[in-house]
Length: 382
Ligand code: GAF
Image (tube, rainbow, N blue to C red):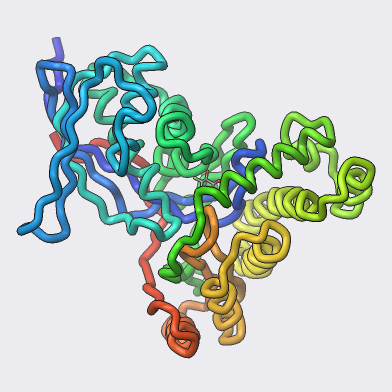
Protein backbone atom coordinates (compact mmCIF):
# COMPACT_ATOMS: atom_id res chain seq x y z
CA UNK A 1 0.00 0.00 0.00
CA UNK A 2 1.32 3.48 -0.85
CA UNK A 3 2.49 5.41 2.14
CA UNK A 4 0.26 8.36 3.07
CA UNK A 5 1.92 11.64 2.09
CA UNK A 6 2.57 13.79 5.15
CA UNK A 7 4.41 16.71 3.65
CA UNK A 8 5.59 18.31 0.43
CA UNK A 9 5.94 21.53 -1.53
CA UNK A 10 3.60 22.68 -4.25
CA UNK A 11 4.11 25.52 -6.72
CA UNK A 12 1.51 27.43 -8.74
CA UNK A 13 2.31 30.16 -11.28
CA UNK A 14 0.95 33.65 -11.81
CA UNK A 15 -0.22 34.49 -15.31
CA UNK A 16 -0.06 37.06 -18.04
CA UNK A 17 -3.21 37.45 -20.07
CA UNK A 18 -2.37 37.71 -23.75
CA UNK A 19 -5.91 38.62 -24.71
CA UNK A 20 -9.42 38.83 -23.24
CA UNK A 21 -10.04 41.21 -20.33
CA UNK A 22 -13.32 41.09 -18.41
CA UNK A 23 -14.68 38.44 -20.74
CA UNK A 24 -14.32 35.55 -18.27
CA UNK A 25 -17.35 36.41 -16.10
CA UNK A 26 -19.39 36.99 -19.26
CA UNK A 27 -19.13 33.41 -20.54
CA UNK A 28 -16.50 34.52 -23.05
CA UNK A 29 -13.01 33.58 -24.21
CA UNK A 30 -9.59 34.31 -22.70
CA UNK A 31 -6.02 33.54 -23.78
CA UNK A 32 -3.65 33.72 -20.79
CA UNK A 33 -0.35 31.92 -20.22
CA UNK A 34 1.24 30.69 -17.00
CA UNK A 35 4.41 32.44 -15.85
CA UNK A 36 7.69 31.00 -14.61
CA UNK A 37 7.15 33.04 -11.41
CA UNK A 38 5.34 30.94 -8.83
CA UNK A 39 3.90 30.88 -5.34
CA UNK A 40 5.16 27.89 -3.38
CA UNK A 41 3.49 26.30 -0.39
CA UNK A 42 5.46 23.93 1.83
CA UNK A 43 2.80 21.95 3.65
CA UNK A 44 2.78 19.32 6.36
CA UNK A 45 -0.05 17.39 7.94
CA UNK A 46 -1.20 18.00 11.51
CA UNK A 47 -3.14 15.65 13.71
CA UNK A 48 -5.80 18.23 14.64
CA UNK A 49 -8.13 20.48 12.64
CA UNK A 50 -5.97 23.59 12.91
CA UNK A 51 -4.26 25.40 10.05
CA UNK A 52 -1.24 27.65 10.50
CA UNK A 53 0.05 29.86 7.67
CA UNK A 54 3.33 31.72 7.57
CA UNK A 55 4.74 33.77 4.74
CA UNK A 56 8.47 33.98 4.19
CA UNK A 57 9.35 37.59 5.09
CA UNK A 58 11.30 39.90 2.76
CA UNK A 59 13.38 40.78 5.79
CA UNK A 60 14.56 37.74 7.76
CA UNK A 61 14.92 39.89 10.88
CA UNK A 62 11.26 40.85 10.81
CA UNK A 63 9.28 37.65 10.39
CA UNK A 64 5.57 38.20 9.87
CA UNK A 65 3.34 36.58 12.50
CA UNK A 66 1.72 33.24 11.68
CA UNK A 67 -2.03 33.19 11.06
CA UNK A 68 -3.84 30.34 12.79
CA UNK A 69 -7.42 29.19 12.34
CA UNK A 70 -9.56 26.13 12.88
CA UNK A 71 -11.28 24.26 10.07
CA UNK A 72 -14.19 23.64 12.43
CA UNK A 73 -16.90 26.21 11.78
CA UNK A 74 -14.73 28.05 9.24
CA UNK A 75 -16.94 30.55 7.38
CA UNK A 76 -16.60 33.71 5.24
CA UNK A 77 -15.43 36.59 7.44
CA UNK A 78 -13.59 34.18 9.75
CA UNK A 79 -10.12 34.98 8.38
CA UNK A 80 -9.07 38.29 6.86
CA UNK A 81 -6.12 39.77 4.97
CA UNK A 82 -3.95 37.68 2.66
CA UNK A 83 -4.59 34.49 4.68
CA UNK A 84 -8.27 34.72 3.61
CA UNK A 85 -7.20 33.35 0.19
CA UNK A 86 -5.78 30.31 1.98
CA UNK A 87 -8.71 29.84 4.35
CA UNK A 88 -11.20 30.48 1.53
CA UNK A 89 -9.68 27.75 -0.64
CA UNK A 90 -9.79 25.22 2.20
CA UNK A 91 -13.36 26.29 3.00
CA UNK A 92 -14.43 25.88 -0.66
CA UNK A 93 -12.84 22.40 -0.77
CA UNK A 94 -14.77 21.35 2.34
CA UNK A 95 -18.00 22.85 0.97
CA UNK A 96 -17.51 20.66 -2.12
CA UNK A 97 -17.20 17.54 0.05
CA UNK A 98 -13.42 17.23 0.32
CA UNK A 99 -12.08 16.41 3.77
CA UNK A 100 -9.34 18.95 4.50
CA UNK A 101 -6.75 17.91 7.08
CA UNK A 102 -5.08 20.19 9.64
CA UNK A 103 -2.02 21.75 7.98
CA UNK A 104 1.08 23.81 8.66
CA UNK A 105 1.75 25.98 5.61
CA UNK A 106 4.77 28.07 4.70
CA UNK A 107 4.15 30.39 1.75
CA UNK A 108 6.76 31.96 -0.47
CA UNK A 109 6.29 33.76 -3.79
CA UNK A 110 8.10 35.24 -6.75
CA UNK A 111 4.88 36.52 -8.34
CA UNK A 112 4.79 40.31 -7.98
CA UNK A 113 1.81 41.42 -5.87
CA UNK A 114 -0.50 44.15 -7.20
CA UNK A 115 0.89 43.97 -10.75
CA UNK A 116 -2.15 42.26 -12.29
CA UNK A 117 -0.28 38.93 -12.58
CA UNK A 118 -2.63 36.91 -10.34
CA UNK A 119 -0.60 36.39 -7.22
CA UNK A 120 -3.83 35.53 -5.37
CA UNK A 121 -4.87 32.79 -7.82
CA UNK A 122 -1.35 31.32 -7.58
CA UNK A 123 -1.70 31.14 -3.80
CA UNK A 124 -5.15 29.54 -3.96
CA UNK A 125 -4.06 26.93 -6.51
CA UNK A 126 -0.91 25.92 -4.64
CA UNK A 127 -2.85 25.62 -1.36
CA UNK A 128 -5.70 23.71 -3.05
CA UNK A 129 -3.38 21.12 -4.59
CA UNK A 130 -1.43 20.72 -1.35
CA UNK A 131 -4.59 20.24 0.74
CA UNK A 132 -6.17 17.77 -1.67
CA UNK A 133 -3.02 15.66 -2.04
CA UNK A 134 -2.14 15.66 1.65
CA UNK A 135 -5.77 14.77 2.36
CA UNK A 136 -5.21 11.72 0.14
CA UNK A 137 -7.69 12.86 -2.51
CA UNK A 138 -7.20 13.49 -6.19
CA UNK A 139 -8.92 16.51 -7.62
CA UNK A 140 -9.76 17.48 -11.18
CA UNK A 141 -7.89 20.66 -12.08
CA UNK A 142 -10.87 22.42 -13.61
CA UNK A 143 -12.91 21.61 -10.52
CA UNK A 144 -10.15 23.02 -8.33
CA UNK A 145 -10.09 26.17 -10.48
CA UNK A 146 -13.82 26.58 -9.83
CA UNK A 147 -13.34 26.10 -6.08
CA UNK A 148 -10.48 28.61 -5.98
CA UNK A 149 -12.72 31.08 -7.80
CA UNK A 150 -15.44 30.36 -5.24
CA UNK A 151 -12.95 31.13 -2.47
CA UNK A 152 -12.44 34.60 -3.96
CA UNK A 153 -16.11 35.22 -4.77
CA UNK A 154 -17.71 33.96 -1.55
CA UNK A 155 -14.97 34.03 1.10
CA UNK A 156 -12.74 36.96 0.13
CA UNK A 157 -15.53 38.94 -1.55
CA UNK A 158 -13.84 39.58 -4.91
CA UNK A 159 -16.29 38.81 -7.76
CA UNK A 160 -13.60 37.56 -10.19
CA UNK A 161 -14.08 35.15 -13.09
CA UNK A 162 -12.26 31.83 -13.53
CA UNK A 163 -9.44 32.83 -15.91
CA UNK A 164 -6.60 33.25 -13.44
CA UNK A 165 -7.19 29.96 -11.65
CA UNK A 166 -7.41 27.98 -14.92
CA UNK A 167 -4.26 29.66 -16.25
CA UNK A 168 -2.40 28.72 -13.07
CA UNK A 169 -3.61 25.10 -13.11
CA UNK A 170 -3.69 24.34 -16.86
CA UNK A 171 -0.68 26.30 -18.14
CA UNK A 172 1.86 24.47 -20.30
CA UNK A 173 5.40 25.37 -21.29
CA UNK A 174 5.56 27.24 -24.61
CA UNK A 175 1.78 27.57 -24.83
CA UNK A 176 -1.01 30.01 -24.16
CA UNK A 177 -4.27 28.57 -22.81
CA UNK A 178 -7.39 29.32 -24.83
CA UNK A 179 -10.26 28.93 -22.39
CA UNK A 180 -13.92 29.00 -23.24
CA UNK A 181 -15.23 30.12 -19.86
CA UNK A 182 -18.73 28.84 -20.64
CA UNK A 183 -17.89 25.23 -21.52
CA UNK A 184 -14.56 25.28 -19.65
CA UNK A 185 -12.97 23.74 -22.74
CA UNK A 186 -9.23 24.36 -22.90
CA UNK A 187 -7.00 24.45 -25.98
CA UNK A 188 -3.22 24.69 -25.68
CA UNK A 189 -2.09 27.16 -28.33
CA UNK A 190 1.64 27.10 -29.21
CA UNK A 191 3.08 30.49 -28.33
CA UNK A 192 6.54 30.77 -29.84
CA UNK A 193 7.86 34.22 -30.61
CA UNK A 194 11.60 33.68 -30.68
CA UNK A 195 11.60 31.98 -34.08
CA UNK A 196 9.81 35.03 -35.48
CA UNK A 197 12.39 37.38 -33.96
CA UNK A 198 9.77 38.79 -31.60
CA UNK A 199 9.54 39.35 -27.85
CA UNK A 200 6.62 39.90 -25.54
CA UNK A 201 7.60 42.61 -23.09
CA UNK A 202 5.87 42.70 -19.71
CA UNK A 203 6.31 46.00 -17.89
CA UNK A 204 4.85 46.72 -14.47
CA UNK A 205 3.63 50.34 -14.52
CA UNK A 206 3.72 50.31 -10.71
CA UNK A 207 0.74 52.65 -10.82
CA UNK A 208 -1.03 52.49 -7.51
CA UNK A 209 -4.29 50.64 -7.92
CA UNK A 210 -7.13 53.03 -7.25
CA UNK A 211 -10.57 51.79 -6.13
CA UNK A 212 -9.79 48.52 -7.87
CA UNK A 213 -12.19 46.15 -6.17
CA UNK A 214 -15.17 48.52 -6.20
CA UNK A 215 -14.62 49.42 -9.84
CA UNK A 216 -14.18 45.78 -10.87
CA UNK A 217 -17.46 44.83 -9.19
CA UNK A 218 -19.18 47.84 -10.76
CA UNK A 219 -18.04 46.76 -14.25
CA UNK A 220 -19.31 43.26 -13.62
CA UNK A 221 -22.71 44.59 -12.51
CA UNK A 222 -23.01 46.76 -15.62
CA UNK A 223 -22.29 43.73 -17.83
CA UNK A 224 -24.93 41.69 -15.99
CA UNK A 225 -27.40 44.54 -16.21
CA UNK A 226 -26.80 44.81 -19.96
CA UNK A 227 -27.25 41.06 -20.44
CA UNK A 228 -30.49 41.19 -18.47
CA UNK A 229 -31.85 44.10 -20.51
CA UNK A 230 -31.23 42.10 -23.69
CA UNK A 231 -32.67 38.90 -22.20
CA UNK A 232 -29.34 37.03 -22.42
CA UNK A 233 -27.88 34.43 -20.07
CA UNK A 234 -24.45 35.90 -20.75
CA UNK A 235 -22.93 38.47 -23.10
CA UNK A 236 -21.22 35.63 -24.96
CA UNK A 237 -24.51 35.06 -26.76
CA UNK A 238 -23.89 38.29 -28.64
CA UNK A 239 -20.79 36.69 -30.19
CA UNK A 240 -22.61 33.42 -30.83
CA UNK A 241 -25.18 35.38 -32.85
CA UNK A 242 -22.47 37.23 -34.80
CA UNK A 243 -23.76 40.59 -33.50
CA UNK A 244 -21.90 43.63 -34.83
CA UNK A 245 -21.15 46.70 -32.70
CA UNK A 246 -23.73 48.67 -34.74
CA UNK A 247 -26.40 46.02 -34.16
CA UNK A 248 -25.62 46.03 -30.45
CA UNK A 249 -26.11 49.80 -30.25
CA UNK A 250 -29.36 49.49 -32.14
CA UNK A 251 -30.67 46.67 -29.93
CA UNK A 252 -29.85 48.52 -26.73
CA UNK A 253 -31.56 51.73 -27.85
CA UNK A 254 -35.01 50.52 -26.86
CA UNK A 255 -33.90 49.51 -23.34
CA UNK A 256 -31.53 52.09 -21.95
CA UNK A 257 -30.13 55.51 -22.58
CA UNK A 258 -27.20 54.73 -20.33
CA UNK A 259 -24.19 55.23 -22.60
CA UNK A 260 -21.95 53.37 -20.12
CA UNK A 261 -23.88 50.11 -20.58
CA UNK A 262 -23.40 50.27 -24.35
CA UNK A 263 -19.68 50.91 -23.90
CA UNK A 264 -19.21 48.00 -21.47
CA UNK A 265 -21.08 45.60 -23.73
CA UNK A 266 -19.23 46.78 -26.83
CA UNK A 267 -15.92 46.09 -25.10
CA UNK A 268 -16.91 42.53 -24.17
CA UNK A 269 -18.31 41.82 -27.64
CA UNK A 270 -15.23 43.06 -29.49
CA UNK A 271 -12.76 41.64 -26.92
CA UNK A 272 -14.15 38.12 -27.43
CA UNK A 273 -13.56 38.53 -31.17
CA UNK A 274 -10.01 39.70 -30.45
CA UNK A 275 -9.28 36.58 -28.38
CA UNK A 276 -10.28 34.34 -31.26
CA UNK A 277 -8.34 36.48 -33.74
CA UNK A 278 -5.25 36.22 -31.52
CA UNK A 279 -5.68 32.45 -31.30
CA UNK A 280 -6.01 32.25 -35.11
CA UNK A 281 -2.86 34.35 -35.61
CA UNK A 282 -0.86 32.04 -33.35
CA UNK A 283 -2.30 28.90 -34.89
CA UNK A 284 -1.42 30.18 -38.37
CA UNK A 285 2.16 30.96 -37.28
CA UNK A 286 1.67 34.72 -37.75
CA UNK A 287 2.49 36.05 -34.26
CA UNK A 288 3.27 39.55 -35.60
CA UNK A 289 -0.46 39.90 -36.30
CA UNK A 290 -0.99 40.00 -32.52
CA UNK A 291 0.32 43.56 -32.52
CA UNK A 292 -2.75 45.37 -33.87
CA UNK A 293 -5.02 43.12 -31.80
CA UNK A 294 -3.20 44.10 -28.60
CA UNK A 295 -3.48 47.79 -29.35
CA UNK A 296 -7.16 47.66 -30.22
CA UNK A 297 -7.77 45.85 -26.92
CA UNK A 298 -6.07 48.72 -25.10
CA UNK A 299 -8.20 51.30 -26.91
CA UNK A 300 -11.32 49.34 -26.03
CA UNK A 301 -10.29 49.08 -22.36
CA UNK A 302 -9.53 52.80 -22.32
CA UNK A 303 -12.56 54.16 -24.17
CA UNK A 304 -15.30 51.56 -23.68
CA UNK A 305 -14.56 49.62 -20.49
CA UNK A 306 -12.81 52.64 -18.97
CA UNK A 307 -10.36 50.71 -16.78
CA UNK A 308 -7.02 52.19 -17.82
CA UNK A 309 -5.03 54.91 -16.03
CA UNK A 310 -2.72 57.67 -17.34
CA UNK A 311 0.35 55.64 -16.34
CA UNK A 312 -0.61 52.73 -18.62
CA UNK A 313 -2.17 54.87 -21.38
CA UNK A 314 0.96 56.97 -21.80
CA UNK A 315 3.23 53.93 -21.54
CA UNK A 316 1.31 52.22 -24.37
CA UNK A 317 1.58 55.39 -26.46
CA UNK A 318 5.32 55.72 -25.82
CA UNK A 319 5.92 52.06 -26.73
CA UNK A 320 3.95 52.36 -29.97
CA UNK A 321 5.70 55.59 -30.88
CA UNK A 322 9.09 53.91 -30.47
CA UNK A 323 8.37 50.87 -32.63
CA UNK A 324 6.31 48.33 -30.65
CA UNK A 325 3.99 46.32 -32.92
CA UNK A 326 1.24 46.56 -30.34
CA UNK A 327 0.71 47.13 -26.62
CA UNK A 328 -1.99 47.02 -23.98
CA UNK A 329 -2.74 47.08 -20.26
CA UNK A 330 -3.36 43.59 -18.80
CA UNK A 331 -5.40 42.26 -15.90
CA UNK A 332 -8.34 43.58 -13.91
CA UNK A 333 -7.49 47.21 -14.60
CA UNK A 334 -6.57 50.54 -13.03
CA UNK A 335 -2.82 49.99 -13.29
CA UNK A 336 -0.70 46.86 -13.22
CA UNK A 337 1.30 45.66 -16.20
CA UNK A 338 1.47 46.62 -19.84
CA UNK A 339 2.42 44.00 -22.41
CA UNK A 340 4.00 44.90 -25.73
CA UNK A 341 4.95 42.87 -28.78
CA UNK A 342 8.20 44.01 -30.35
CA UNK A 343 11.05 42.91 -32.59
CA UNK A 344 13.55 41.48 -30.11
CA UNK A 345 16.32 43.89 -31.05
CA UNK A 346 14.05 46.85 -30.20
CA UNK A 347 13.44 45.76 -26.60
CA UNK A 348 16.18 47.84 -24.90
CA UNK A 349 15.12 50.98 -26.79
CA UNK A 350 11.47 50.41 -25.90
CA UNK A 351 12.25 49.89 -22.24
CA UNK A 352 14.17 53.15 -22.23
CA UNK A 353 11.14 54.85 -23.84
CA UNK A 354 8.80 53.48 -21.14
CA UNK A 355 11.17 54.68 -18.43
CA UNK A 356 11.57 58.13 -19.98
CA UNK A 357 7.80 58.49 -20.26
CA UNK A 358 7.36 57.70 -16.56
CA UNK A 359 10.18 59.94 -15.47
CA UNK A 360 8.94 62.92 -17.57
CA UNK A 361 5.55 62.64 -15.89
CA UNK A 362 6.90 61.87 -12.43
CA UNK A 363 5.28 58.42 -12.30
CA UNK A 364 6.89 55.51 -10.46
CA UNK A 365 9.75 53.92 -12.36
CA UNK A 366 8.33 50.99 -14.41
CA UNK A 367 9.79 47.55 -13.91
CA UNK A 368 10.48 45.07 -16.72
CA UNK A 369 9.63 41.43 -15.99
CA UNK A 370 10.61 38.19 -17.65
CA UNK A 371 7.59 36.28 -18.90
CA UNK A 372 8.03 32.78 -20.33
CA UNK A 373 4.98 30.60 -21.01
CA UNK A 374 5.53 27.94 -18.33
CA UNK A 375 3.89 24.88 -16.81
CA UNK A 376 0.94 24.99 -14.49
CA UNK A 377 0.68 24.16 -10.79
CA UNK A 378 2.55 21.08 -9.60
CA UNK A 379 4.16 19.32 -6.69
CA UNK A 380 7.85 20.21 -6.66
CA UNK A 381 9.36 18.36 -3.68
CA UNK A 382 8.54 15.76 -1.05
C1 GAF B 1 -8.90 39.79 -12.69
C2 GAF B 1 -9.92 38.70 -12.39
F1 GAF B 1 -9.52 37.96 -11.32
C3 GAF B 1 -10.14 37.81 -13.61
O1 GAF B 1 -11.15 36.88 -13.34
C4 GAF B 1 -10.47 38.63 -14.85
O2 GAF B 1 -11.80 39.08 -14.82
C5 GAF B 1 -9.49 39.78 -15.02
O3 GAF B 1 -9.34 40.54 -13.82
C6 GAF B 1 -9.90 40.73 -16.12
O4 GAF B 1 -9.83 40.09 -17.35
O5 GAF B 1 -7.64 39.23 -12.91
